[in-house]
Amino acid sequence: MSVSDPIADFLTRIRNAASAGHKRVTVPATRMRREIARILHESNYVKGYAEIPGVPQGQLVVRLKFTPQHESVISGLERVSRPGLRRFGNAQDLARISRQLGVTIVSTSRGVMTDREAGEQGIGGELICRVW
Image (tube, rainbow, N blue to C red; front, side):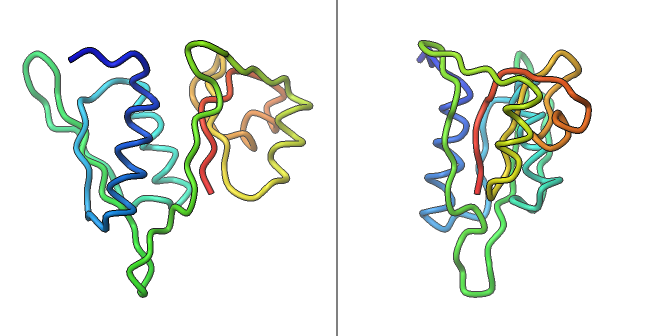
C-alpha cells in the first residue's frame, strides 16, 4: 500500500507505539526517517535506533524510551509541514521557536537538524515536526 506522507506515517507509528507501551517500532528505512531517529536519539527522546539491511529496502528499528513509571518520554509529537501545506522558517523564526519546550526538527540545505542548531548556524529550512 502506498503512503502519501511517509514522515507522518513514521511519526504516527512512534506515537501509537509509545501510547501502547511497546518497546520498539519497526518501519521501512529511508534517509529522512534515519535522520529523524538520529535527532530523537540525540535529544534523548528514544533509547536508540538501528538499521537492518534488506533487499529492496531495509528496516529501521527505533527503541522507545520510558520513565520509571512506565510512561513514554515523548508526550507529544506533531507534523508541522505536510505535503499539502509546506511550512518554512528563516533563522529568526527558528530562534523564536527554539525558546519553546521540546525540539523542532528542520530540514535545511546543510541537512536535517534541530531548530537550535539551525538558529546557531543562521540558516532556515522546512519545519518537519515538533517533539515534546
